Image (cartoon, rainbow, N blue to C red; front, top):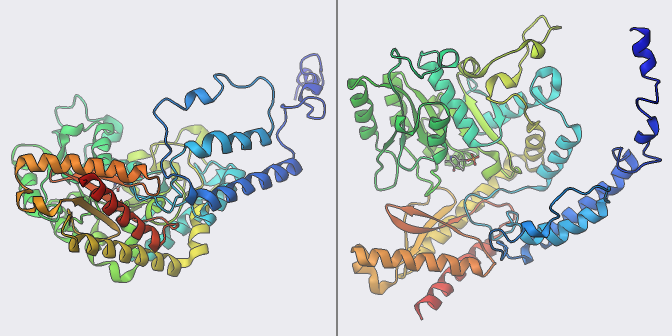
Length: 513
Ligand SMILES: *Cc1c(COP(=O)(O)O)cnc(C)c1O
């Protein structure tokens, strides 16, 4: 080290050390561990109070778009503020204005439970502050991820040929899977791209009309375009028609296009329909196509051995996604991507610049960033490790069984009520229903009645949600407006499901009068 550099370290004309002395100036230093301890205890007390009281809040806050921004200062404060002031503002400004995903009456979309052990895991993840991009940037983050992925693989009943990783969302997992499928199609897209290449015919991906929009987005992002995604029709149960799939692929081949992947869904987002994966796997294998299974929500049910029937054939997939942040009681975000072709994923996404090269190891190390479009990665395995250990697979199975039983109960109520109807089968824990007063039963299919029923059910949904006791969402099934009740929160109890049904019936009766 040169003398002049050494001197500059002690030159307080350049850097007067007291500007960084927290004893003399506030705001320049992090909390010392004792202050952190005190503030963290206060924060955890506020978190526990929130969870203790969330049931009494309306699930969806009574606020209008744009009404919240004005509650907050327009610029960051110049002077330091206290944690006490922040916690007071969380109570005053944040808690009353959030949608309460932790509310027992949350039945909209697919719920996410931030379970106690999951929250504690997240706290530790934040505390370590590790970026899990390379093995050496946190060896245990990488190796615990391998362990937890394999725990989940076994819990789901899948064979050991599947490796995997944890990503943020199913959207990313499916993007990675389709990126690998594009690589497997042999056009060397990672190196050469696919634009402006006369040697590359249009690549095609097949999914049902009920597939999640993340598949369309993956096609957009991968340069395939939405026009490359073929939406195959479905049967009465909203499951993909395998004959139509095979015909579409064969027609594309005849037309000179290049089929590349099939996406089968186990538990579609709208109605939790189940594509016939075994028949689809036959088609994929016969034609050498990548099979990706999207089980973002439904996948959790495979943890219950007796519920693996609908999953038959998924063990033949090239890749599978399921989201622990949906029905596995893990705080958002955590998505599990499994694949039997991890090296292909690596071919699609690996790029190792000099500054990320691992120099001091003879054997190659596992650097998960080589399998993802992003470099930086969160240490999500830690919270999954907490969740799986706290509940045990046995506890998780019991809870999933309870949710399925409550959904079956609700479906039975709907079916035996002459003023309501089910709009889809209920294979998991989500019920799609609509109000169809008996007076309209024999006219339900004529277009005018059809429109009336849609409007009526939309009003019904608003009325039920306006009670604040429950939060339901909607979808459209075969063009009909459907009210969706998705049971999946660890905080939901049987009485909450009964209450949801009671509210739907009483609000429907009120609309009628
Ligand atoms: C929810 C869902 C997704 C998207 O999940 P994200 O994690 O929010 O990206 C994809 N597919 C299915 C079937 C889903 O239900």
